[in-house]
Amino acid sequence: MNYFLRKNVNRLMLFATFICAILAMIPLVLIFSDLLIRGGGALNFDFFTQLPKPVGETGGGMANAIAGTLMLILTASAMGVPVGVMGGIYLAEFGKGRFSSWVRFSADVLSGTPSIVIGIFAYTLFVLPMKGFSGVSGSFALAIIMIPIILRTTEEMMRLVPVSLREGALALGIHRWKMLTFVVLKTAASGIITAIMLAVARIAGETAPLLFTTLGNQYWNFSPLEPTAALPLQIYTFSISPYEDWQRQALAGAFVLIVIIFLLNALSRLIFHENKN
Image 1 (cartoon, rainbow, N blue to C red):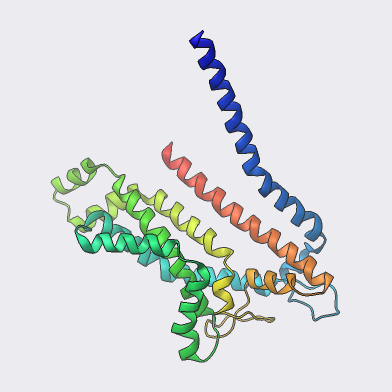
Image 2: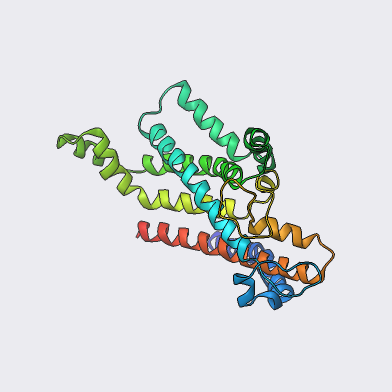
């Protein structure tokens, strides 16, 4: 009797978890379908190659916003990735005592800090002294968001490397920095790359920090010291406008942004899965 009871309870719980997994996917499917249905009409070649049209003119695109987002991500990665990776290496290999505990605690707090607060911080640190909005201030705010994600994940990936690999390399007379570079880092590389891609996916859709730092731009701009267009900003601006064409383009831009984030997350999972195999 107990055997059949356990078997039925197991089937019931398995069914319940399956239903919960389906329920968790429903919001994403609804968002995807809604954006595609309502904004799909604006997805064409012009959307990816042209600038936004003035009010009253139909057509145009968000090419400058897409290019601006890529520029901000690359600049933010150049700032945040080295700090996050090097900080994670320090915590994993050399971090002991109270100072390391405070670094870990600060990273955990920073990862939970609202992005708008980070935007205000970047505004105070860059925009006010420079007396103007710029791409570099937005990249700085995004880099701050990236650092704790990369730092903590790098530390955990480094700790997963077996101690025997470190001891074997040191026993062969290799310098410690070579052991860390060519043995430990190489072994943990896929996990660190996954963390970087997840951090990039996180900042790709951030809007609040950019409102205080980059401001946005309706034209092409490749100078990091000038106001820069970004896809999240363009979506925000167009979505709150009273013009149907702009609203349709905002929905199309949101769909493109979600697809980019989806692909980044899928690629990071693929890299991590291949490393496990």
